[in-house]
Length: 221
Ligand code: 5RP
Image (tube, rainbow, N blue to C red):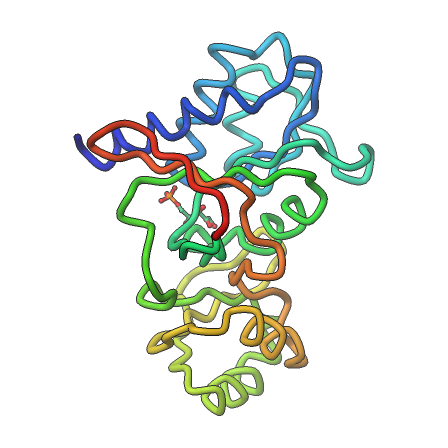
């Protein structure tokens, strides 16, 4: 099965988590694009609205006639569905390959259940082969980069990328993340960091992995 087909079957499995008459949180990326298309096809007139984590996803949702609402207008969400760049067996994630990490983390924090959808290449033993994205206030970029080098990372500016929030992305190469909780805490303490794409304090609750043998459901170890 191709990686794209694996993404699609994982996205399809997430439809079972969507409750009629609910407002759902929606992430960003190619796997989530499948989810948006499928939710519109199978449940479009049954959900009330969506809270979106990016302008790109908002546009796709609206294109299907799904109402997009501001997180500030709604209470806690029942469900957030999003992809990931890497997951370990504790369902701690690296996210932000698409640059939407800050809004993704906000919507995940506002949701009772986080269902992550991915193809099976995303499940890894140790996080960090995928460069860890970090959103930074532009004027603090070099200050933050120096601090990160002290943590053993090799920060590289993602050239030409400005986030939906008007900031820049540093991709942190060379990390082997064995204690994701600690690293997330340390990075969060650096002044000028808006958000790091390490989802350890708020990991996924369920990981739906598309494989050659169908969808495999993981919950945290
Ligand atoms: C965007 C993300 C995505 O979830 C992540 O990059 C995975 O993307 P894809 O589904 O295209 O593989 O974090 O910021």
